[in-house]
Amino acid sequence: MYRETQILKAVPSNIANDFDDNNEMIINVGPQHPSTHGVLHLVITLSGETIKNVEPHLGYIHRSIEKMCESLSYRQFIYVTSRMDYLSSHINNHGCALCVEKGLQIEVPARAKVIRVLMDELTRLASHQLWWGAMAMDVGALTPFFHAFRERETINDIMEETCGARLTMNYMVPGGVMVDLHPNFQTKTKEFIALFKSKIDEYDELVTGNIIFQNRMKDVGVLSKEDAISYGCTGPTARASSVSCDIRKLYPYEVYNQLQFDEVIETGGDCYSRYLVRMREMRQSLSIVEQLIDNIPEGEFQAKTKAVLKLPKGEFYSRIETARGEFGVYIISEGATTPYRIKFRSPGFSNLSALNHMAKGYKIGDLVAIMGSLDLVIPDIDR
Amino acid sequence: MSNEELKIKLSELFPSAVFEEGGEWLTFLVEPTNWKTIAQQLRSSNDFDYLFCVTGVDWKTHLTMVYHLTSTTHRHTLVIKSKLDRNNPEIETVSDIWRTAEFHEREAYDLFGVKFLNHPDLRRLFMTDDWKGWPLRKDYEDPINMIKL
Image (cartoon, rainbow over all chains, first blue to last red; front, top):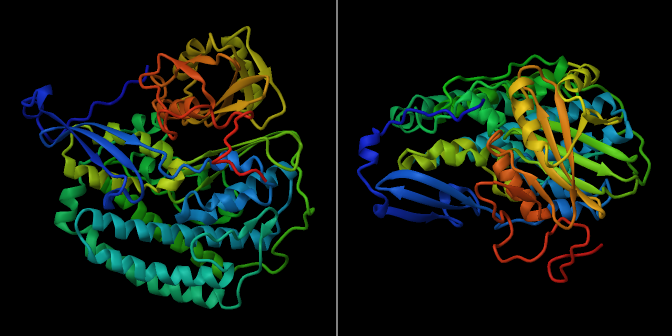
């Protein structure tokens, strides 16, 4: 039978036990706090400086997107999902489009498939860049944040030209993508690849090897493989605990099975491993973009679909790998123009549920590093 | 393992098992009273260690709890459905078997009003503690916060 792993903590238990229960202190972090990266409220029980319990209070930006989707048509509901995980809005849209296509058995043209993968990987890069800047800032280094935003800006410019938006793109539609690529797309993306290849080495020099940074990250927030699976963790969080869970490899969609890339896995399970996974993933994404940018097939960018989409009666589930992990769309259709019930399985929600287990026994200062390494996006959790 | 093989294997383990056809994955219908024992057996003997989606559905006449399970070693997926009484929905918690269920069950309680027996901390998750009603049920009305299209 499964048991939670007891991790040997850096703090000897006899020191932690010096404080009896009367000395417990409860402090609130958030809802407005720089390290929560959004409106997340944590109630922390402390004994001295040692964390005894972390309880997340959610719902400050709960919009009930699932209820909203029940009154929107299959074309409309995709736009709401950009507002969940706003850092990988492309991939959210993609997951929903995949689910609708699965229900209607639409064959997506080859050009649209490649464009979608290109956009997904650029989004993943932008998301990881922002995370890298914020992560370094959380543990006290302010400069990397500006470096990260400088490079992220070039991706945003590429997105803006083709999709017309910088954050909530709404570019994927059932059957393909909304418009064809901008004529500048290829040159600009190639410029970005050349630029970022040197920059990512700079990132490593600036932060990865830094001894202060490593001391803050190593052996902090350890999550074992069994716990990562049991808590439903996915994405870089689980892959740092040596769980193989990359949907792009396990259940390939679009053209991922024709591409050369590795599933990045680390075995440490601590904050530093999670950091390394994301850093190596950036290089993998860059290589995917490089493989595809000169090989975009000619042809249609959107399959011909009916003006009003009606999914047949039944249940459809599609899964996709966002920058944070497995994003699932579960549609129950009664054959009408709107879904009867939609459930979004958001990666951040499950990753957050492991926070208490990861943070217990560490110092309060480590909590910031642990939360930073989880890469939480609050609208994705609250929905 | 394909759906058919999984079905044969599960029928041996649970002779009275009822399955639903037609979906992408094999769907196993369980009674809410048996769910805990079945869950324990699925976890221990079939390596269903990864619970990736827990949700409720309001069918107006009854509620259904839907659990999506995957085995990370064998890569087969199973869907569990359990029909609950709409006026008094009760089902055993599985949060001690799959730890992720603790949060997911709190979400289902918050939005559907499903009571999970023996859950360690069954409180509202997204809504405030004094919220009235179960927002994702079909007959839920809120004149202030709901915009009807």
